[in-house]
Image (cartoon, rainbow, N blue to C red; front, side, top):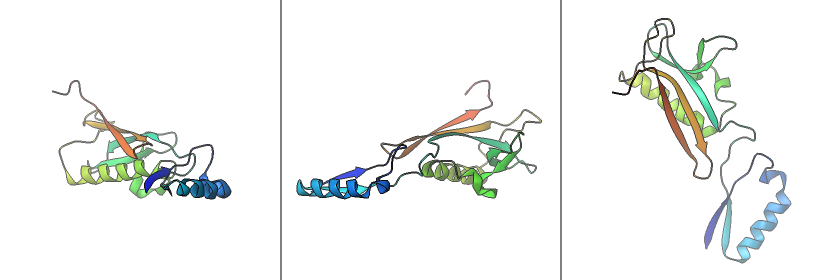
Length: 145
């Protein structure tokens, strides 16, 4: 049997219309197609985001969002509110990059006071049809050479 993944959209949720879902599942099953509900983000979650990367007091990279009205980064790992507005794939990517930055000294985090350091932001965008994340590194560098 063929398989099809149903996904929700921003305007409606499959769980909000269980009768329609049951009817569609039955009709497709009659034609040999299995309907599976794919994982989706919470309705209204951001599918693109710019996350700050700044040097902490000890020089280690802090990956998170700015505290309201400041340029003070609150690391996502220290405040779960960082994760709430984002698509789960963005949250997974942010956590993975933060872990890599802690484990590696190849990229330095930007320091606003000295205007030094390479990595300033992570720009993330979710491609919903493939459940993948595009990650762009925003650097403080005159060139890539």
